[in-house]
Image (cartoon, rainbow, N blue to C red; front, side, top):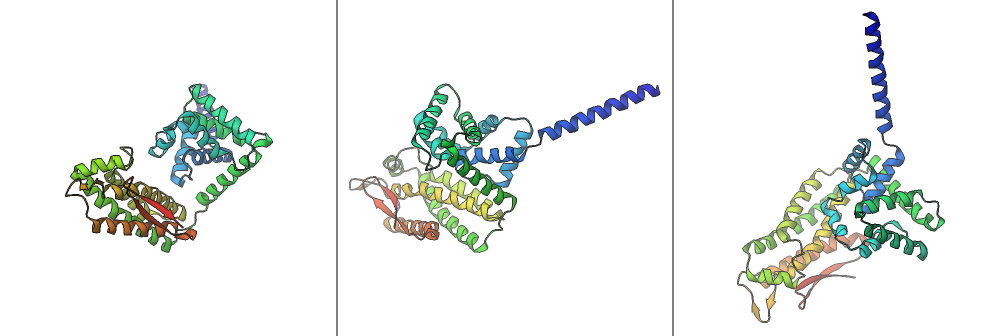
Length: 317
């Protein structure tokens, strides 16, 4: 009986040792972490948050390949713009994202052709990005040296920001809160117009570019979510991520300022359409948003109404 207990104990020890070794083997390396950041930056054009990176690391440690992680990320709403591109447009997007401006023309042409070939060979866009990221990080080809160095520098800066975050600048946060409140006012007024579902709004939608525009109600909901994110933001990286999304939202709202003032010839489509005073008020708020978003760069912007397209367009000095 003692002999049996000894064997059982030995088997338990061996099993525990094996499990510990497997856990250690699954732990991600620093290079693996860098690879995940490179993937995220290439897919979305921005850095992941600390929470997002932790989720990516967990996926890799649970056995997912980089391509599988990329496939999961491709389901994100923010990737839809890239996912909708045709093979040639996507190839241009990917080469611009991964190759530095001084990359030789031959390198760019080869990378573009490779991307198109992979897509036509039935690889998904997410799989192509994952493979391209791994290739550019590993290649010894001197044609891609500057691109490899640039990507490594970007990844290093991201990890420095995540691992040693800069605490939020309260003055900048207050300014970002102001931008968000302004955009909420514009979105809420336009949301009311949308929900009235009047004829001028539908016709104006066509004039402003078609049904592919984000609806004001959707933009309003997105802003309310960002309001919560900004309220809980503790680092400059988190604040900057919110402000970048606010800049994108301002671009989405611009055309709707034209829709709300849409006329068909000399006849206004509906008496419910916003009057000139209401539109000018929203336009003034929009100009303030533009000024606050671009002020740090030393420029000034304003929105200009185009009577042909019935949209407001951004003009910067």
